[in-house]
Length: 324
Image (cartoon, rainbow, N blue to C red):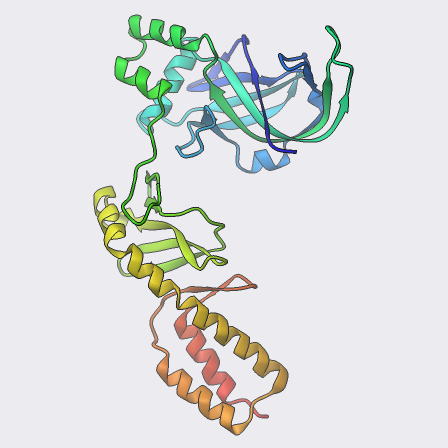
């Protein structure tokens, strides 16, 4: 079954510390859809591994906080949200201010149902009760009456008109002119991150250690998903974007060398199985001479190990010395 989203409205939010708030994410009450979620059926294991809190399920933006605690309390699924230090992320500051002043107090849980029981859907009986469900994520969300409440927040000086627009109309992903890919650049304490496509990441590779450029690499597609620029090497957002615009096409061509590496990996496996004759030794020795000694990690499937061209060259040299 697909992911289901449930919003719990009209609940009180409790401030429990500096930029920390306790929310009620879910109860066992029947909702507008005539459904009940058994609070004892929550599987929280995977959520606890990455307990980020989003705003309005906007997955193309940064998290606005993290859940420092989540569990069943007083028969309800409760979670404590901690917002990042003020000034770290302006959008998170806006959300925190609205939570603190009572203008935002609804959460939405996204979950995958595992087990459920269907009912008759009468006036006082549920049409479905979820008895086992895996929590995927939690978002702070606006509710239908929220725009008017947020306008009051503007009138009362809690937020500015510009901040009201940011909270009601989340910014669109920025376009990097490398094909038709729409991306959302991000900046962390250590890196500038420039995504260029959606694919399953299987490894982190170095593009240039000297320049402080690495990338998240998708082995199946043999393409880069996200470029990472180290800020301690002098990279800024503007410089990183300019680099991607200039090099993205060329890097895609360089990464296609992966196909060659895959063939060599297969060759090594074949040698291990069949052995090496004199002719094969000569070919391997010639190949070892041709491979440069640069330090460019390349992902090898299916083992998903990272090696360098230098490592590969040395491996081939060792193979060329093996006895039949």
